[in-house]
Amino acid sequence: MSKRGTYNIYGIALSLLAIEIIFWLAIAGFYIGLKSYAPGLVYHRPKYFWLLISLPIITIIFLLLLRWKNKRLKAFSEVDLISEALPDLSSTRTIFKFLLYRFALTAFIFGLIDPKMGSKLEEVKSMGIDVIIALDVSRSMLAEDITPNRLERAKQTIGQMIDRLKGDRIGIIVFAGDAYVQLPVTSDYEAARMFLSGISTESVPVQGTAIGAAIELALESFAEQEGRSRSIVVITDGENHEDDAIEAARDAASKGTVVHAIGMGSIEGAPLPVVDSRGNTIGFIKDASGQTVVSALNENMLIDLVDAGSGIFIRAGASYVSINELVTELGKMEKQEQGVYQFSDYEHRFQWFFAIGLFLLLIDIVTGSARKSWTEALNLYDA
Image 1 (cartoon, rainbow, N blue to C red):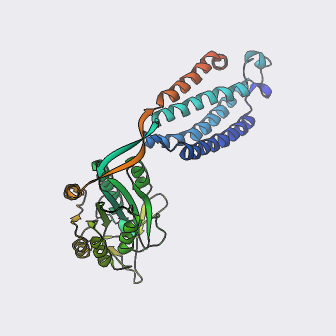
Image 2 (cartoon, helix red, strand yellow):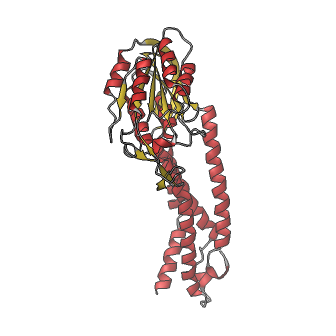
Image 3 (cartoon, rainbow, N blue to C red):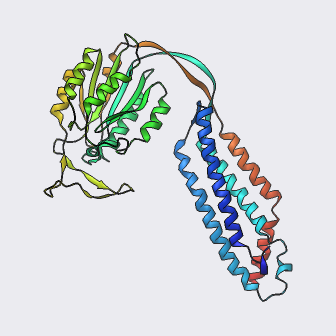
């Protein structure tokens, strides 16, 4: 207990700051360690990871609440019997009680995230083809002639394709002025969704649109196995400025790889937004003469691309991309047997985290004398 029957806010704040730093370092260490030593670990509801942000916010609110309660307790500063009236008032016990609630909440959050672990490795043989998606991430993909914008609609379309793949393997390449492998060819659809979510216009540092480089990189990224059915799906607005995309598609077709294209954007085009760090539009890009730059779909180039690549062209609508025809074309390709080692028999682990959270709350109930002290303090103040 601190002087005059109040809480030692400064000491509590320093203690919680140290615990906060250790907590997040431990979380980071466990996450990195699990990725390295437990590759079969996946998260059933990864969208709930954002709830972890609430933990430091709750700590700040707790300290503010203690400061407010100190002001109320100081109303007794003229009373000689304050220590006797509040014999159980303790900064140490208060920290302990708060940490019980905090770590219980942490356990409940991880219970919602629901980590799953593959109980064994087994070879799963399936029939399918190899598909690599080449996604344009140049700034022109931020144009909003397609809602919410071209890039976000393209990512949603890829997500729909992943949902409809049956036994096929998928890879993702991102490109702008250069091309990079975002995800090697894999049958792990959960990994594909995870890598897809992290794609943005910052994924490629060099601006431009090098469709040909993306197709060439896709050809290099396919597994070196003869007779496999392979397809490349280019998703772009077609504004190619860097290379000969038509020749790259023709070369792919000569090697037995079909090149399809999904055109993102409208013929009329739309201005290119300038966004701040929060993703809010704060203006539009202008050229050297001060005119607003408008990006339009280069449909003719993409049609020539798929003609050279023996594929089909699909133009995105304003709010929806129909991929039925594309899925049908992929389904017509000859499928081969492919054996891949993967984690199977995933077991949910949420119950362990909920059990830990309930156990911590039970400890608080058993050691709940601090609650009685608060009740006596508030009753004395009201009197």
